[in-house]
Length: 278
Image (cartoon, rainbow, N blue to C red):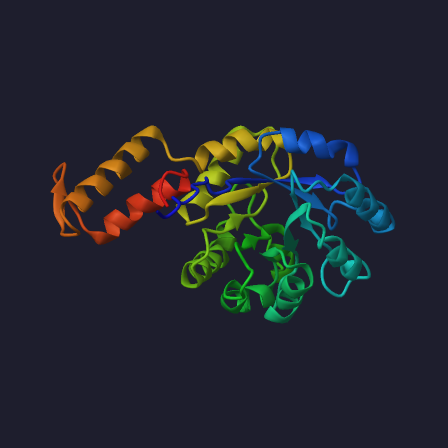
């Protein structure tokens, strides 16, 4: 008899914690995010990077693995960061400034870990479809702040980063073509403006993203609420699944609307995002 698949909810929130603040690691784990990322890159000053790496090495625990955002390839800290990521307490490597397949392949081969590339430069956007197809890449992340800087863009205040919409779409398309889970949207810099945070997350979800990066624990609940299907959505998805299966895959009418295979696939995607469908 075959073993039933283990159903798990896709991560919706990824919380950064600075690598040079080990006293915050346990708090980050307890904050309620789906995944915790220890940041050895942007959150750590150059002179503190060796100390941050050493602190993380002590804190890593195979029973509670963490994602590690390493420093970019070509920096003085990259090789030692990658060596640390071989530790069984590292769940995956988040690779900043991803711009080609060679570095990603090298990280996979060196660590035997999943990789989450951050697309945050013009070269990264150009190479995103190739990056998404590298074996070992499990999900793409969008570096909105760095990409805007690289492109010389000045996003309008409270404008929903409409200037970056076409680049977000590139990640969504590349993920779909490569068979990856929906990508992770970049950070929202607001912490206490929950209306703005909710709007940012809603925009990302409507555009095809499945999760969002968090810079503060206060952001977690609002982001997870947006990326969690509502009870009504789950009821609809279950009904569509059951009606379509009962019709043996033929188009059928439910509540006055046609249900065909694309609608059925959409219903399954909603159930999978909640960990309710293999």
